[in-house]
Length: 475
Image 1 (cartoon, helix red, strand yellow):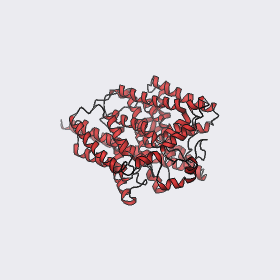
Image 2 (cartoon, helix red, strand yellow; image 1 turned 180 degrees about the vertical axis):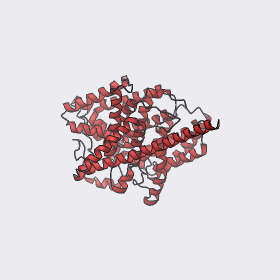
Image 3 (cartoon, helix red, strand yellow; image 1 turned 45 degrees about the vertical axis):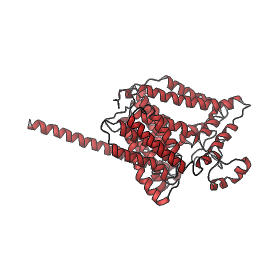
Image 4 (spheres, helix red, strand yellow; image 1 turned 180 degrees about the horizontal axis):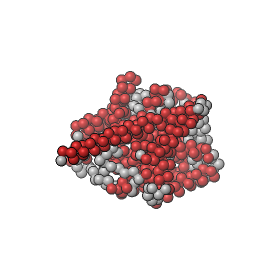
């Protein structure tokens, strides 16, 4: 008996050591991959050709790593998106090239598994609709004489994380509540924002610079992340089998005030929206209802003291602050209106030629209002002096009235299918919040180009629609 017990203990120890080594290897590979892409960027920027073979070898190794451990690769992608502001602030290096290459490798490795029949994948009707939609837009843009380069730029900026949605399903990844999963990773990364935002606030005061590790002057991302983190915290308070009430409630309060520290008072509109939509079926619970009433009173008080009391809501419609208006003084005088989010939508609508019915219905084509992000090649209707203020403006110009409506309907169909496929678990609550924020924040900023917002939405959606993921345990 003693020998058998010792033998079993040795097996357990060996498994622990193996798991630790395995995790260390994954961390090492992510660092190595980041160095490889950095070397590749150096090759392109400075023509240091001897670095290219080293980068290629490391990228091939990472390709194999993603093929073997796709979920670890996905978590690395999410982490790089959340922590991308660190290299931007420290060494002025934007990790966009790393993220895009990681996403592509993740998608391609999953596709290879499906083609080799190592992983089962079934096309749903919604997949056919999505492919048809983008296929039509591709043909239509080429018909409108939009260059293929502009079309690829538009996809690269706004829809690249859709590859994660398919990559997750190609790899057959599952949402497992008994191990590290996507929601736990997201919540940990949200919590990391707390000390960094507080330190930045103490140094810079309430300004757009206070945006945690998400980037530089990206307070809309902080609003999005705070809303998602708050929804997860509330779920942990009310839904867990062994809820840690006080610790999660404290986290909820702290996460909710993060945008406030950066002066992003618009979160007072989006946080209640995400909360009410996500928990619309839970207001019959007495404790939850009392909690909600207290929250509503608190938010109304804050709204009155900030957005309503200081006229910030009016600025949302009529214009921005005085300094920015002066920056665009010539444009403002010529148009007779201030460069506001609302007028950005109006201007985009006016650019659709009503006499040309196709342009009115389907826009001017993919890429015509897009910014090339450093490639020095912008779309025909992108104005460097007055960039579009929100995603809805871009959608109207590129997709037209009908095309924009169809796109939103497709997203709604995806969300409804995910809700039908799963129980009311933490994954679906996070998806609900991500879905409603993605829909309504199109009037606030260019949210499709926000890496953090996009990676959360498409990744959580991918897990929700994964056929294998239907075997989740109920929350």
